[in-house]
Image (tube, rainbow over all chains, first blue to last red; front, top):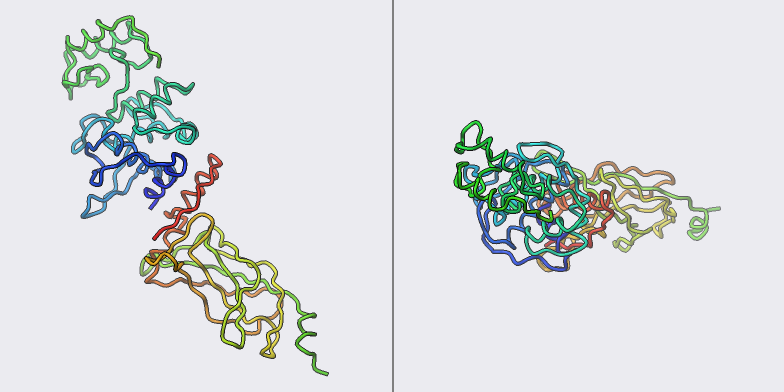
Length: 215
Length: 165
């Protein structure tokens, strides 16, 4: 019920709800506007109850899922910001006070709401752009989002601090030669998403070395 | 010498009606009706009920308190209001209507006749089992009133009224 009320809340502050596909699934790719409209509505009850457990229906039965646990390439999940559950998880990791893997941000509801209520977004990327243009914390927010398989970092900016420098090279070097599942694999260093950290990732850092991103 | 009705009216005291509304979550669990509208009525000899006092809301736990209502005499010759309590699935937060769009889910109780002055505690009252879905809206445990309260209390935003069908 609070999911539907979340749609009402978005409508009341936006004056519209981004166009949504009639058929959409929590853990699978839809489109950018559906993922944002549904992702917000999925996140809203989590914030109200301060609980990452989301109850959803696949059309035949109800299930509970902990939105703090999915990560890159989680079984049964698509990755990226076209997935409503990923968007909800990203908002949750900005909101929550639990650190997990790349997420160390505990920002609560106020800043999220400030953006929701002060401007309009059609997609989660637009929401992020509004966040990025604000004075809110950037690096930790990027990594909280990254934890949910949404990568808004600048190219080569492995640690999401806005600069491509020796710190990024070091992260790639430490994970160099690893594959997904290896003890030293670091998802941040797999810049081309091929589940291995190798010379191709190092080249991305090298080609962008010295760049500064305004984030 | 017996007092006339008008004299009784002039001498009338006040009655405060208290109680609690809850709804069926399922066949075995009842939950409070939070922040729904309550209206106190007086049953008149014509068989109709007439509102007395202003409507008000249940609290988060379903309790209600009418405040002081003049305990006027009825034309039926007995002293005190013939109290009926109604609850309505509407408030400034949300309303629940049926498919016609005009019927607000509601329930009115039986009568407490000739209420004495003072506090009339009518105890626990329950809405209809077959209309329990309408009252989920007013559940603080998972209803949208909880969602409304969250925004109001954390960021000071009062979400506009919503109507559910």
